[in-house]
Image (cartoon, rainbow, N blue to C red; front, side, top):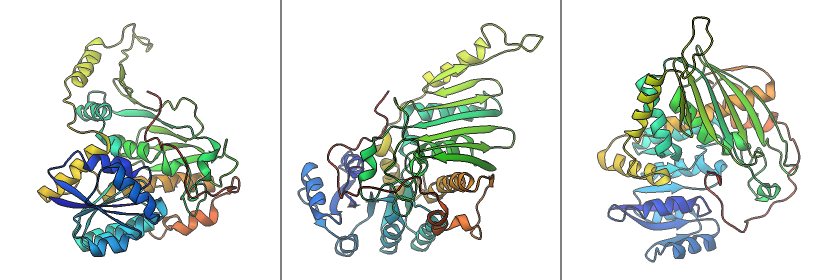
Length: 385
């Protein structure tokens, strides 16, 4: 039985708590830490964790409890220090996305993981979705051929008051807008499905939130050896229509799932009906996929528990988390400097450091409100099917 601690008991922690409760024979939640102990007590009561203790300091919980694993579900700017602290205490860590606001902090976390010998996993729960697992499986067959183009829409909508919460809406405290805090999932999926690009070009703006310094919309072009990908990161898209569309040499596949496969007439124009055989093969591949035993946060936490038990690396490790931050950093650097950014970003590059973004990023508007908490449910995932 593994002893679990939760650091940060805001809205996103509910997904972690619910996931752990799916494995009652493997784990016991023994501690909850939050700078607002009242929130931790509410979480303890809401989830029936009668034997768990509440702390107002993560360090105190790490010192008092014999923990095996902690979930860190705090604002992004705190992830590095808390992760390093937990790893140095000999505790495995799963940390919410984004891993940290800078590559410099990501490397500090990775170094702490190497020194400690403990496990570090960064939340990327969309890899544990049946529809995206199907898309990944199709790509791995190679049946669509060389990938020429991808279109990834990380389209969300948030009202103006979203940025009133104290840690949102500034470069220093939030680390950025939807490029970092919403599209991080789609950026991770892009790397998972397509691999690391060679270079990035981008533009960004604040189109609808005049109470926040940060962008609320960015568009990036990712360059691969013989292909391109377009990525939109947004909190101004009504309907939140998110999609991944991948154009291969022989076929197009998409999430939500659809498939098309053209064949050419002698003059190069598409033949009516396309390649029916290939379409049927791809449809059969998807239909034959075995559903995942657990999805979302539950799927990822289940993998972390199995990794501890089997003494192996998790499917999503700290390096995967850093790779996503590198792509975010490249998008911000390209948009701010109005030039193409080559990857990888090395430690001697000024964009490797957190301070560069804070110093150079435009303040589209100034933050006009700062409330400690907000009423109502925090929605995880799109509200639109």
